[in-house]
Image (cartoon, rainbow, N blue to C red; front, side, top):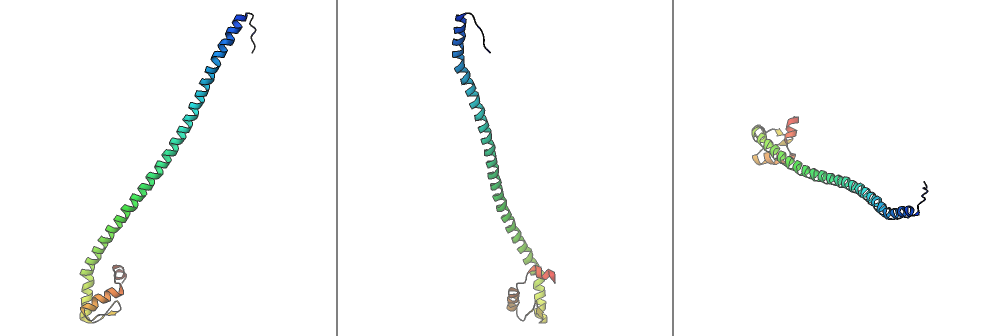
Amino acid sequence: TKMFIRIPKLWFALEALRDETTPVAATVISASWRMYSCRLRFKKAIKQIVIVQALVRRFLAMRLRRKRLAAVKKIQAYYLGHLTRRQLNAEVLQRLQRAVRMSIRFDGVKLRRRNSILEGVARKGYDLARREND
């Protein structure tokens, strides 16, 4: 809007005031815009950093899980071997001794001597699963 000012001194005073405040106002607007845009970039960067951190933590957790799972499987294998050997010692060796005494076939292998018993078991790959299926 236009103002009609009759006193020239007042007009010049207002123009001088406007000339002083215009750069200050421009600086305030520019600073506010820069602050707003920097905040947006900062928030976006924080979100991206959180995503990367989550992915790295997931990778490290999966790697630790794989290591622990391998350790668990190794312990289970040792324990299963212990159980198998214990059962072999108790049950299978008795069957082998009876087979030798009776001179019969054991899992398709004719057994005659003590050495042939162990060789026959090793040759046939005798394991606990085969015995359980019988």
